[in-house]
Length: 390
Image (tube, rainbow, N blue to C red; front, side):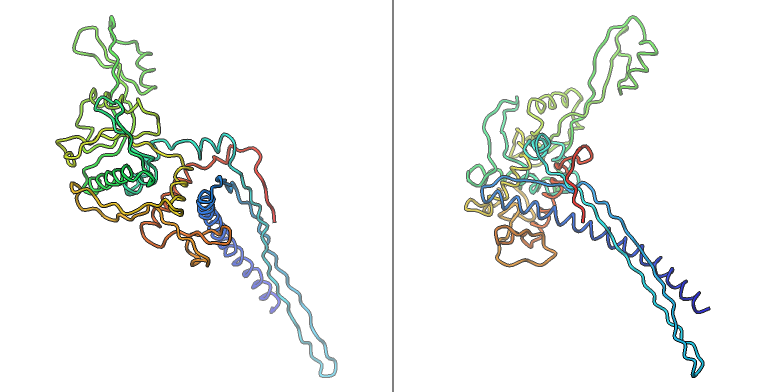
């Protein structure tokens, strides 16, 4: 009877050990991969600050085999003089794992498109829509502002680099102005949507197959006021715009015209239209934000670890109360000793690079991390990764 109880205990113990070990392994791998990505970002910032090129490696997959084994040995000692038998039991439960990690170096076309190519406007819109402070997003992502006439003609460029103090300070004040408007719910950031209409003169209603084809392609036929005239309409989601008025208050024609001005710029430009007669309109501005590549963002942060650093810039008198306005977009501390373990850090040439311990800097590093996630290679399409087994 004792042996049966012992066997049952062994199987019960192995059943409990499996899920616990698996849970610890999954959480452990997740933490390890996250920490690797943090270190890669900081390591590349250190490399750029040292005049070296960046390099990224992506963990594409982790496959781990878990081996659970149980053992039970039964023995005993018999002593014939007293005439008794003393049984003994030896119980063993072991668990082992054999992880296989696949990593992919970013290079070639993927490296160019994901790291060196300018960031498209969709990522800017996405981050602001998710609630990231627009001034933080602008300071990190915008290479500058191209000021244009209302007709869309180039006037001048405001560069977002502290090596050009006058332009840098002007852009910082504009960023604070937009942050104030956004905090007071007076700023609109989104795609311009409008109906694109094609007028057609038909002898009668469109045939049924034409109507069906139009519906399948998100078009629709509509009878116009004039006899024999029909409109073929299509809802267009156009370019991203930053405005101090609700674009939905414009007509479809006005939104289409505004979108045409935005479309005259490349995909890494975000239209900026701050008009008089609306909140913040005493400081009107028409133009576009020019977005950096991810490599330029890292280079901008790396500049802050050298001689040409960002500095404090006060808001414009026309700007209302704003929140945090730190001198640096993302401050990186460099020290000889390791920071606390929970701080994102990386060791480079004997020194430790870590994110400054402030709410702004931690959030700015989180923003940089999110941008890294949307710019890394789609590893599911890579044919020959490097595999490491241990």
